[in-house]
Length: 245
Image (cartoon, rainbow, N blue to C red; front, top):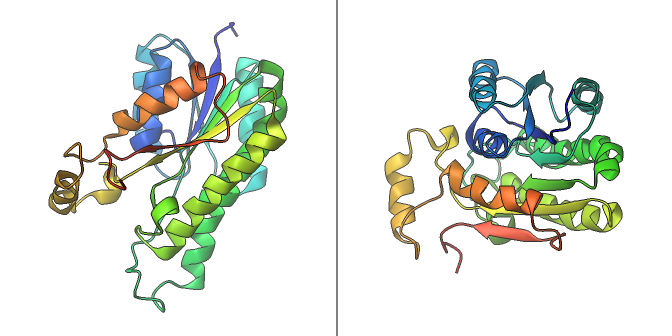
């Protein structure tokens, strides 16, 4: 173990989570990459993190399962001796048209809320005592869907609105030792939109900045919220190229 700071990133093997992992590793921070199904992606991300000269631990855990989250956090502290940052990037959705009310089943609701809301809560709760010791920080990856009510499904939008509310609640409960913020991207070019690239590009062309987000665009905001924005807590920072103006 060394004195480097440590970040746990749920959903850290792909997309936004991977971009954040690499950005923090470049700052000399040891990384814990959590995944639930994408083992190969997690291994690839871990290899890239280690190339930056920092330590990396890979942890398989379903964030919707409180017991698995607690084990993951315990393993993190056992391996590195500390925990400084948590990024809740794990998420799920189902693509169901907003008008298809019958198509949005109870099972879909349960899955989406379990990962996107309960999962973030479980991770924050398990990490709290360790982050309190280090004066750490949390960033929850939410979405503009939680602000606009429009997204891949009504359930997804509701889950992200709940995650924004959770951020505000925990910022108050965890203060003053721990700061809690959220970053709400617009459409991000990840595997979630695979096969829809032309449609997404057209949407981006209609924004003030003329493009949609990359995972790296989101990491550009997450990193300073964790590392330097010492007077910012309970806030949701929108990263969407001006799409919802």
